[in-house]
Image (tube, rainbow, N blue to C red; front, side, top):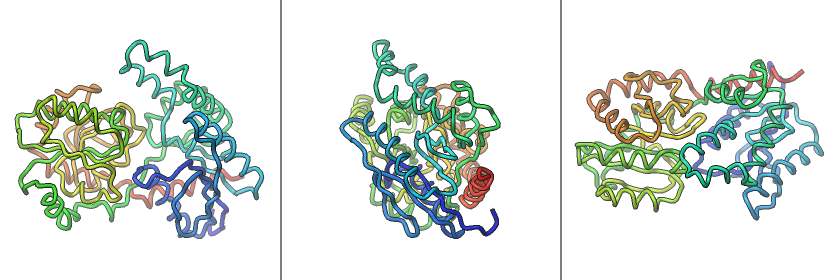
Length: 376
């Protein structure tokens, strides 16, 4: 691409300040803006970002189904009616992009996994739900027509080709990047003591950290149940993220560990929480690539997650953390926590070294090259 200044359009339905995907997109656009490109974001709501032109997309928000369908339709209409960008990159299931980044994975695969955990009478409703049907229809269209598809893990790439007839040559795997300055083990000296003190935790209290929005899918119930199996009754769990904490809080109370689980809600700045913890846990049912997991590794935390998290591809058992063999098994999670505790420092150091291979600068460079590759 050289020094050529490009007009680049990004499609992202909504900016959620605490979302990992939004943080990634903002960082990506910052890197592209610093390279001199003309950036435009097409969204229904977006937080102002220097050097980025915002184009509002109107949607019908009466239901999730209508909101999804009208956004996809109106975003493409507006793009087609304006000056054609040099490249359109969509982070949503739309059908007018040059590059689709499958950051949310494959919806057909998610429905398959979700059905495993649903009561029998609910399984058919997933397929009949208008929202799911619309998302599957949009997936079929975009995977059929989009010239270039970017996945953030080999797992998602494989799943897309299992569900849809997409040639392998149309898919590129680009792992997400992380800000290695912002997320660093050095933050412990700045934040650890103060945050622990504000939460009533002593310096030697062992602390697990869970960060994620959508508690059910991210496996919070497994973490809470696993905490009840640990012999160390002093261990605490910090829960950070958006979601209905009621069911999880009730579970903790029923297991007699309500006082050991701190529900802290969504946080504008998650950095201090990585600094205050000893081990990051995310036994997710499905996560194409959990940015929080990579942020934890960059912060020098060992991690425990599942093979259904794309980041697991960066983890070797016993080195940077552990990958669970099964989903929703609290006893296995508890066992891995116990096995990790004697090796936290060494695993945390290796986790940081592994994360250093995936800087946000590398991610920006790789995506920039893809934009150039896509152009005729």
